[in-house]
Amino acid sequence: QVQLVESGGGSVQTGGSLRLSCAASGKTYSIVYMGWFRQAPGKEREGVAAVYTPEGSTAYADSVKGRFTVSLDSAKNLLYLQMNSLKLEDTAVYYCAAANSWSVGSQLSVHNKNFWGQGTQVTVSS
Image 1 (cartoon, one colour):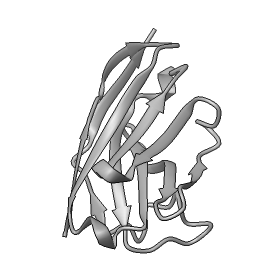
Image 2 (image 1 turned 120 degrees about the vertical axis):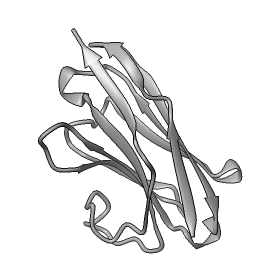
Image 3 (image 1 turned 180 degrees about the horizontal axis):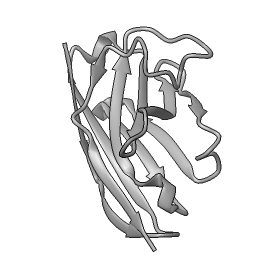
Image 4 (image 1 turned 90 degrees about the vertical axis):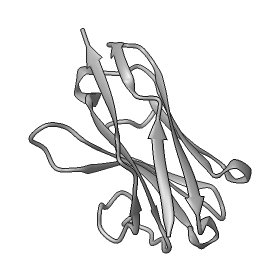
């Protein structure tokens, strides 16, 4: 099993920045994928950013490209999401996910993700 714990959420004004962290523990050697997802009230959970951990290749949702950056500290089993130029529509609960498999085209899909964190709230206000 793999445990994921997110931190770093909070409240920020539009245009501000936040950095989320996800700490992975347990059988992390089995993970080849880590990603960030978010779910706003009344909406489905959606993929935000992902990284293929063996190579570090990344994928982003169009809505966050150029504003968000995902990064991985493999030595510390930490996944980060640097969020800049935050918008009102970025308000959501952000979840970290991990998986034992990776496939091109499904990086931002909520399906086939083996492990999930409990989520951290990000609120952007004007």
